[in-house]
Length: 377
Ligand code: KG4
Ligand code: ZN
Image 1 (cartoon, rainbow, N blue to C red):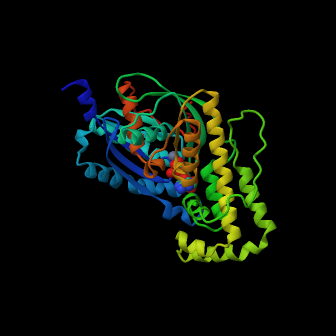
Image 2: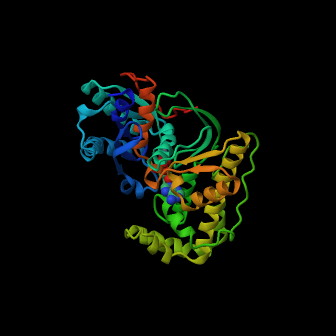
Image 3: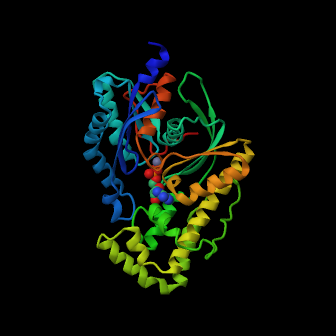
């Protein structure tokens, strides 16, 4: 068997518990997803309108063993077939991360398998490559990568490093949010408008029925790095808009009641939303998307790259995808997204990132720790 075949056969178990998804996956050769199990805690955090760290840790503890077992079963492999165990050790909620890190350490040590610590953000970068490889494509590097989720909005310059068959990258930070992440703005605006949690998917659906030009949101005024983002201003602008339009209050109350009854479907909430509310939602989304797209393309121009990678929960947004694709076509740049399932948090991306680091000879030991603010660059 050649070295390459051996690598293709190398099975990595990925474990992810940085926020509110308990996830495990088996990936072969860093590219082929044999299983990807995600246990979402959305139902638990929904009534609080956001992730409650203590509840997240408790749920991870409850779910991690069955989730890993299911990933192995779905892939038809046993623990002894594994080549390595890769676990997210940051950034994220420290109590949540600790569950995955502790479990990964104990498992790797009990099995006598190598342990790899993975940066969650690098996982999001690898999600794009997993998807591209599945459709027989390989993004040309260097690239600019936008990671946009509930916890992050950050731009990296990504270069290829090493040529031993695995995708190894180096990163330089170009810019990032100075306040809220874009997904956080979606979630907070959804909360103000009583649209349920998480806010991104429902705003995505409802925005299609509104006029995105109806409400004007000013570009945030910022000095310093032109590639930084700010989303707290737009959230406040939505709040002021609602204060100036008290006639929208009764429908907010009606939607609150619907949510309390468990009626959180897009159709139910749309039926309880006036044209003015749908216009506000569409305009909010347009402003966020324009902000993300314009800075990402400007960063690509500055760094003379022809490839854009977009990943993270908000990369599932239809308007964001449409706009990136249209601009990419217009300017002759390649734009890559993961599928929606690989955009949001999952462990296949952690296994893929772990595989590359494993091939590069990296190994973690018993000192591996959860690091809430672990930087990628
Ligand atoms: O990557 P992710 O699963 O977790 C974090 O690392 O944060 O992202 C979750 C975020 C939430 O804020 C959610 O509202 C947002 O992604 N999101 C979306 C969409 N689907 C999820 N935002 C906009 N449009 C969507 N379709
Ligand atoms: Zn994430």
